[in-house]
Amino acid sequence: MRATPPTYVKINSKAKAMPLGKRQIIQKVLVAIANAPNRKQSMKRVTNLYDTISSLENLRLAYNKARQGKARTYGVRMFDKHTDRNLQNLHNELTLGKYRTSEYSIFTIFEPKERIIYRLPFRDRVVHHAIMNVLENIWVPIFINNTYACVKGRGIHGALKHMKRDLKDVGGTQYCLKMDIRKFYPSVDHSILKTIIRKKLKDERLLNLLDEIIDSAPGIPIGNYLSQFFANLYLSYFDHWLKEEKGVRYYYRYADDMVILHQNKQHLQNLLAEISIYMANELNLQLKRNYQVFPVDSRGIDFVGYVFFHTHILMRKSIKKRFCRRAAKINKLDLDPANYKQRVASWLGWAKHCNCKNLINTILDHEKLL
Image (cartoon, rainbow, N blue to C red):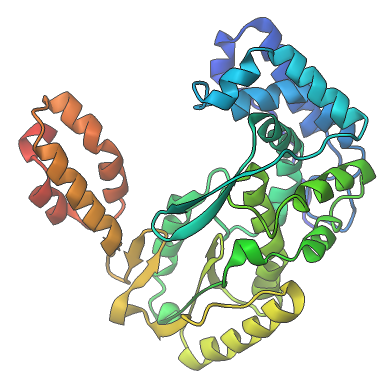
């Protein structure tokens, strides 16, 4: 068994600018989280977490995290009118086991496809952050290295880095199996999710709290801070099955979007059949019928906003179109070079990871970028 490395707690250097009280709160909570027992993946289940989650110190830290970038929103401004009282109320409700998830605000977005979004009041988002302040370091080590969505230090560019590296093995990555799950978030089975959670946790008060949050909406509601972790956790043992039991070497998952590379097309087709059976029997999920098995060099692998080939990487067509439309609008504005660069910076950040130098030279005002 691999030895467990020591845990180090790092306080961001920006903390020096914080008031002393806030810095002490953050240090205290992070030390408590760092000392939580058995954070590495093992058969032993973790308990005695609830008091740390429900503590005022942790709720204060969660409040600061939840309001980052949202200080001007209506819900945050209302909460801020009586911050201490609201945090004390949350602490009391959690301590007494009386906390219940508030009513959701439900709406639909079309970016790029139709999605139903569930939005909670700010007080509930504080509770979700309080839970994840403690559970993130317990759950994330369960995830394999090749799952990328909503995991610190990974994300889209982590997936890009790994796939770019692995495609250097041209012989071993001749064919691609690309698939995703039919209506994944609404289809998550609550009883299965609760069973998976109990593989790692045995704190009854915490389990009751998580059960209440899970049962507050059908499936996993898109929009909840906890949902992104529930989604990764729900598929985490499937990931281990693929890597450890099926011996899949080149596998990548971003949320429910999955890619497997192999040298043999028939092997991928056989694996697809096994995956379909596993999904149905173990997770009560179905793959979309638009799965594909194809030669990598025939069309490229469309994944996390890029199209990967063995020799180069392109920007996804839909993103390129949006980039071109945005550039056309910016070019019509009378902007000085500094403002022009600021307007296109995020697009250039995306573009620098793929081979699109000609595109940039064509659609952007090159003189203002100098």
